[in-house]
Image (cartoon, rainbow over all chains, first blue to last red; front, top):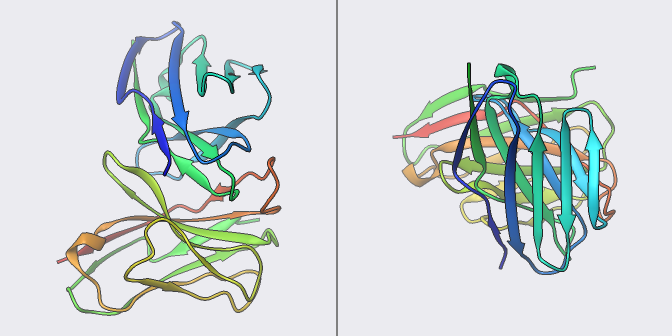
Length: 109
Length: 115
């Protein structure tokens, strides 16, 4: 089976930095995805990591350590519009995505 | 380009009734997927199709069926709805199933309540 863990909730102040951790134990590994989901809306793709290291994309960065089964999503210069759920998902041996339960980030003024 | 559309947006259904959720994509993607999303559980794969004419079972397929007669459409049918099927259903598509770089794109979802 697949086991993907991430914190349920995080709160941060506008302009600050927040790091969302994700640990996984899956049947094989073919990549890790982060999605953003605003309340009542569809998940939208944020980032993809398959090799160890940091991928930076504007205010958002994603890090992967395959040996540790660990990833994080870093959100910098937080804005109110970043209030959303962030979903960690792993592409396993059968090339199917397994999702964590999501981390709800609340940005306060 | 609309991307992925789903219908209906929301539905209240009596237990025991049959219901088909519709999903259409205009990106000519090879693969399509159905997920359900429940509070605290995240997205769970119900059924998938890697190409027109083929389907496969996901993590939670019981009580659901799908068909893939063409590239664009992937309907999900609940033959006899039960209250535990109350959920938000998302359809997704991707271009290159079996590729590590394959990215899934999601439709707006259908909120289904079974009473």
